[in-house]
Image (cartoon, rainbow, N blue to C red; front, side):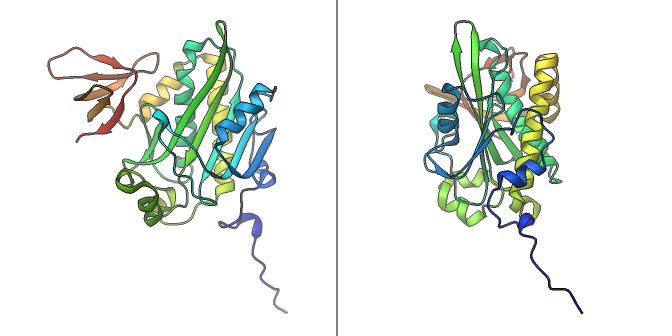
Length: 278
């Protein structure tokens, strides 16, 4: 007698996020040991900030199916349709000075890039906090932190990754900005298992956090330079009072963007919106 075919709900690509399922894929010692999962939040960063202020442990994770007021860099809204993508925030309590916090923006982007590469998609990083596939933004990261004196109390890494949102929904949600946006489903040609991706992301975050704590910024900078999707490209830099063109040539030792005009010496950029101009 033939057996009855029963869908494998645990691996269903339409299945909701599940802490139990994600934990089965973890190889971490800190990140994800304490995880909170919400159906809807204002933003995962805001929820985790409250938890951090009340003593949450290093490695605490907040996940949500959707965010109503998610934010990206420069306060821009982060499009967060429900049950399609991954919206996560991770609390770290590294023993670092406030000046070292920018390295953790790089750590977050590198971890996302690792998880994207595991899907068979060649991901690059774009200063300061984007992850690209075929020059389309598939993820963004946001770093929050609190300091006391000369020490950092905590760092919060917020991550939003477009996994299964389709082109039509991106256009509806982002308008003209959808031209530069993409999703892993669109790039891969098939749906992405969100629980498996979340586990890979958390594993990669702990790998890079451990590397930084053991060896400082050197391995982070080396990996960033290997995956730098901006270096060598002509870029348009938009600052509050001017807009100008330059060629991106890499990042500095403290994670600032290095650019150069044809007739000028290289200069560092600390706060600008950067878009491809070639």
